[in-house]
Length: 167
Image 1: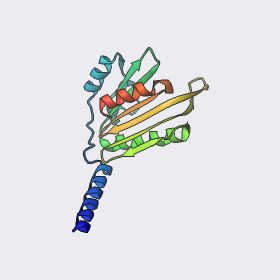
Image 2 (image 1 turned 180 degrees about the horizontal axis):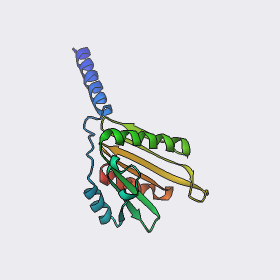
Image 3 (image 1 turned 135 degrees about the horizontal axis):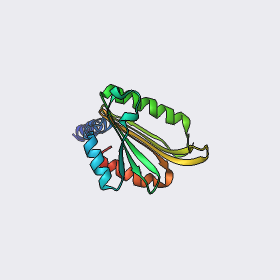
Image 4 (image 1 turned 45 degrees about the horizontal axis):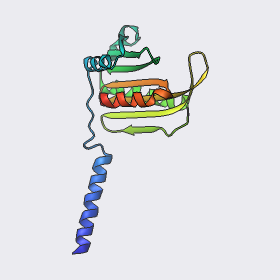
């Protein structure tokens, strides 16, 4: 009898583990451009619509930058015309940053059916070619993507905002 109970407990534990690893209960919901803009303005960011600056405008519904003027970084929001485009751009961007940065801390690349996240702290270069320690965070949910590249000192602030956004 004890063996049956033990086997049943083990089986239930494995089912729970598989469910958690497959993303069950971890469903993220993409936010709209309006929600992103509203939340970021509430946090004190200046919003800039940059869709008109994008070459392939037909691939996007919205492209917004939330500018942190005090700390000198931006959080980029992309709403693609379809999920396949979002997935393709996410994968290309994650691969580019994975190769470009000398990753100092463990990187994390999480993929579920409808969402992906890749973030790390690593050494990169600024626009003038000077070395700097950066925090990079890319998250995709459905047909949207958030991208941040900032000095590593803002990592905790950025992680908190991305969590608040649901990404």
